[in-house]
Image (cartoon, rainbow, N blue to C red; front, side, top):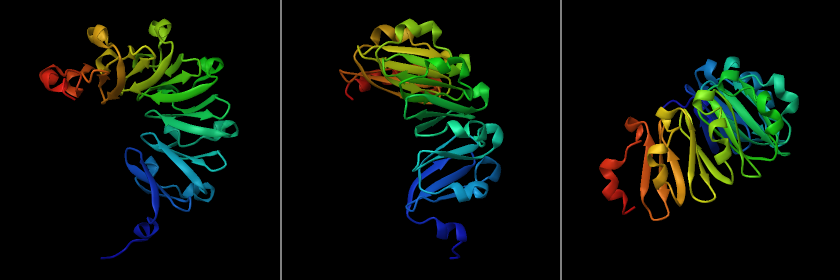
Length: 259
């Protein structure tokens, strides 16, 4: 067997992240090796000299972003899909976490603020809600929008309104939020009282009205591309969203009572 240079480099891998057509691996020494389609972040040679002491990588469909040990960020890949963070580079300091939509990144800083970059239609511009983004604890993403949980348990969303970027219709219900999950086009939040609030594309689970009265004492939510499933305290499960993505669990409801 012939061992390629790429294979030789892929030793002591600590983490692998993927775009739609490429991979990036963090090695034990903090260096990064990327491979795959060069236009989709499969080639990091342009920033290779900056990729030192890498601790975390996130990826969109066509770009990757790495958090370094000094909490700065290096991005590469398709510039139109946030592979270029030069416009916000000076703001990307003390970065704690990065979340990705299909074509945008959003970073939580140590002071609880957020910096976003990439395609504005996919959440790459958070300027409209920037003054609300303080004390951010968590970010989740659909394909085209982001939603954050703040320290006071409220939620701020931005991006494509139809795919979860506008939560104004349910804003008065979004208090004491503990957790948010996302499909490709919708968000679902578990509140402290065990109830659930959903918003975004109804076909992707953004409307849970049909099962709303059953969503009590919810312990966890999982998501497919187009549906949500909630596990209740008694072990029962209720699902909603696109039936072809698991949004209808009625056929197995009897079996689910014993989970």
